[in-house]
Amino acid sequence: MRGLRPLTAAGHRRRTEALLLVFVVVIAVFGHASAGLAMNGELPPNLAGFAISLTLLSLVGHLGIRRFAAYADPLVFPLAMLLTGLGLVLLHRLDQGYIERYNADANAPGQLLWTVVGVAACLLVVGLLRDHRLLQRFIYLTMAVALVLLIAPAFFGADTYGAKRWIVLFGFSLQPGEFVKIMIAIFFAGYLVVHRDSLALTGRRFLGMRLPPMRQLGPIVTVWIVSMLVLVFERDLGTSLIFFGVFVVMLYVATERTGWIVCGVLMASVGAFVVGSTEPHVKARVAAWLEPLSYYWADRPAGVTSDQSAQALFSFGTGGISGTGLGLGHPELIKFAGRSDFILTTVGEELGLAGVMAVLLLYGLLVQRGLRMALGARDPFGKLLAVGLASALALQVFVVAGGVTGLIPLTGKALPFLAKGGSSLLANWIMIALLLRISDSAERQREADARDPVETTITPVVAAPAGGPTGSPPGALSGSPVPGSAGASGPSSGFPSRP
Image (cartoon, rainbow, N blue to C red):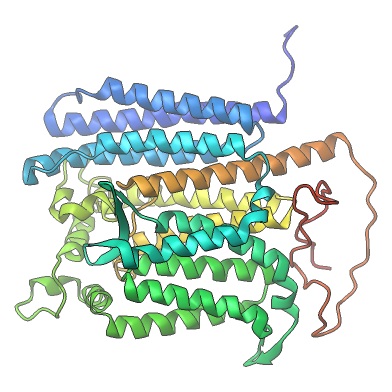
């Protein structure tokens, strides 16, 4: 039609995002209404406020992204909003069961408030951080802060449910491990960009693997020791696994050396076996994992004091394929944990295997978008940061879902976006902001290249001398200039293809 200009790439992305957000609000509001009708025979009294809150959050978030990151991936924000909305629906449903059975406090209103804080923090990061490569200047400061936060619960934390992962200040509890996963991803991305050649090409061979010189091997051993200390002194299996797992994944992506995966798995297995055999709290969780029904035995193993693992299996078994229906189950029988990591059992009981698979697919799609951003990013730091953030999310979902379903021992971590927890929600929304910024920068550069193509010369790939100190291995990252340095705007940095 006359007077209408065709949409740009940014316009198409934001229109797609807006349409998806409409579906997000409809799905969440429908779920809240269905739960109220099933439990009380009438619509929830706060349905209008719930719908308005989600609509305003979606609208403000969409407008903020349109203003500060117009080229960002159109699926990331709607996926995060959908998981958060489903979490609010489940918490509203659980509140009624907990209030009736245990006279507990309602948690859904507080979670909604933290959602507002999380979305505001996401927009603040997107608006202030105009180039993600600026974070590369502060990687050592970031790691120093991360180590302080990681170790702080061991000395100043509150021992809650057998693990020390919270810090209580002025009546508020903070779970620093949720923020540490972002900080370590930033540090590892910057560290591996600088030292990837030494980690991949130099050093001596041992059992078929090329070990780097001690100067580069030192930080790797340090990361392993710190993760073991967290496991011993804080009894926090989940944070330890995520902390070490993210590093191993990023190390493999940077060097493409399978030996690092083998080495990382062996180191983690040895540490977990030693700690699991000696630390009473971890040992009890392993015993509950091996025999979930041991809580009901007359001579149950020492340290097994909870029936959560057994109740989780009962919930999944009750739900079957399609579930009992939202609001028609009894997830409150798992007691306090039903609002944190065991919130997945509510999905399994009331929405069935179909609902669990749908939730896991949402997480999988969010991780896939993060990895896709890594492929599209033009700078090595952005590539590794996107991989690190996506890996941290994937590992946390794995350790939580694996623990609840009985695949691995329980870890006690909160399920991202879905479970109760202000620290977890805020940290995950900051992670979303960083992913949005990386995808926006990559797409802007691609559009700039398409509008102003430059002549490129294909340089033949020359194999580096075996064991030489210079050169890059096939698939390794190329140099990443920090903003403000010469060559920072060059579009050619990234993963070169194999010859």
